[in-house]
Image (cartoon, rainbow, N blue to C red):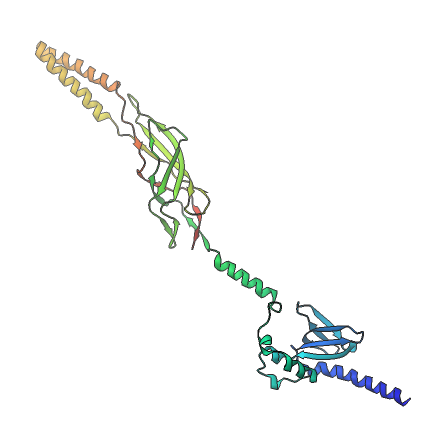
Length: 312
């Protein structure tokens, strides 16, 4: 009977020690809990409550253990061991087990966490940061409508040789800068087509050629983008003065010849005949054609805003 009461008292003492250990061990310590059912739980002590303690495993999983289920609770590493032992002397220890763990744990290992101990979020964040450092930064820039582009043709067009829908190409001679950035760099290629081509006529109708651009090909890896520009056109010069000169020259020559042959009346008749001959020359002669060879500078105007991605 005496032995029975001694065993019962020892059990009560051990139960009280388990509770007292939880109160003495500072939060943040690495601990091991042995439950009354024989299960052992290791992790970091994050919270001590009157009815339970909270343990956090390395993967962040938290376990709530009722104090009534705790057979023993021992610290394996105090918080001071994690900061290099700066405040080790002032840190309360639960039992001699803590002293033994601190004596055998290398300080360097506590100061430098292994890759397994490093949080996964930190590693992913570092990878994202490195990827951001490697990736070029781009910015969207809008070139407003009405902006003019100085372009040099790289393909030739002419009123008597070009046809509607024939391709036309050119390159930008001067960069267009927006907010200090080359939105349209020099050397950018413009691609378009002929919209009309009218050769010169014999009596009336001046020769003309017209085209516009609808695609922009920026230097580098940028994809081609649609572009809207005004139609560029050019017509030949008028030939009225030249035609009048031809008719007048013919009339003058006819008057001279008629005067020599038949006097005053002959001069009048000769003028009429000579003028008619000059008119016939004009009617049988085509006007001037108009052509723009490669290398011709032209000015192109945007009719709609152009949004481009510019590397900063």
